[in-house]
Image 1: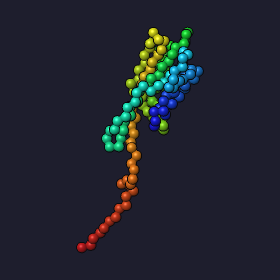
Image 2: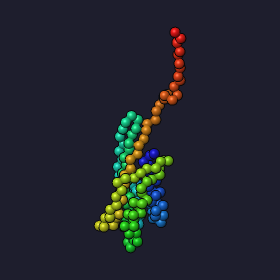
Image 3: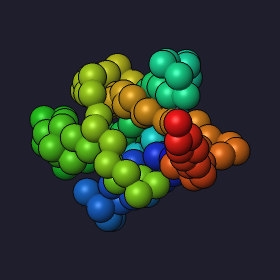
Image 4: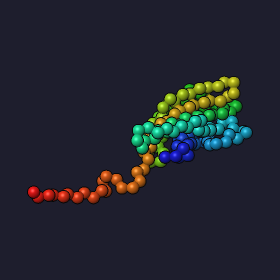
Length: 141
């Protein structure tokens, strides 16, 4: 699973929750009132035991309120808490953690953040134990 697949899965979930609102990835347009934005904040990958790797990612979702917008903060936060428990991406289910919602009244913006940890195993090259041929030498005495 790639970071792009996870970003696309989050954007698709936002479109499913609010089909009438534009969802932007990467760039925020100048006139973004009433729009949603999904962006990758941070990613980190480290090696664990043997051939196992752990990738940690953090995302943010921004909603830019429009004048006279009917989308109340509490309803928005509840929809994201319910809708962003897990994501389906790359044929895997990813559990989301550290979900947080915040309202910024000064800038008329709502912020929702979440994290995910992904585990990967490096492919084994060459022969594995399951494909080795076995021979038995029986010596009679």
